[in-house]
Length: 394
Image (cartoon, rainbow, N blue to C red):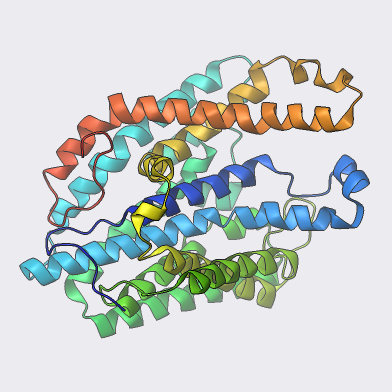
């Protein structure tokens, strides 16, 4: 291990911005790629189609990566704050989180309500948005199923907010040994629930959207932070590649072999596959994070670091971009009439993946520059340990 190249009052690792962008990219592909039986795909890929479906489901663990990274950073920053000042300023923590999340979050909810009133989008009841407004969307989705709205991905923000409810208090009052015990408790509760859900054969939605289940990956992030003890891993390229391979292997095995994600129409695999699958999801996220930590930022593309800095906007807006392309462009733009199959596939990928991806980046860039930046500047004034710089101002 080596000490991080940060002053006592600053902790910023550009490579973690690249991880943020990678996490978003995985979630984006999870929402684009087919995750269950498709007759055309089965026809062309034949025996390899289950690999594609498992890959698409494994990409969903990009959200697990977001959670693990969030827990790692929150724990690291709060521990450094406690070491520097002797305590944790809980009020300042909540002000920083509110300034970072609430403006864009509630703007997205407003846009979601407007979209629900427009022709071409699915209509949702106002009470559905009310669950989101009070950060209870995860429980709403777990109990009653998902809503068909561009704001659906924001359910994960409610899980983050529930983590923030206790995170600063635990770091303020618990020593490192007690924090290990706290993580063990989170993992125990998550696995007890997974065992129960497996026995009851509940739906995938009831499992995936349950906040207590997702807290297992938050525990993984905290454990990684505690294990590193404020230092960076000193790893060579081969070791980092091995960690990345191990990370993807965990995610893929969890979906391909254990079937811990089972879309509508598929059967709940039972208690032990769920317990094992979600454990591998958390482990894979921790391994990927470890693989990136300590990389020389000069080796990373500047565009990846920038896109990581605006990744919150990318995540928030991608549902709107996908919905717009799906509902408001002419059906296939005549692609179905093209007889040359490779060209048809290329154009289809450009229309269904490239166009919404580019639109997401455009909207997120504008939003970051003209809407989020003023709030980020206010947030910076409440920082005890400086972290991510504001893109375009550093």
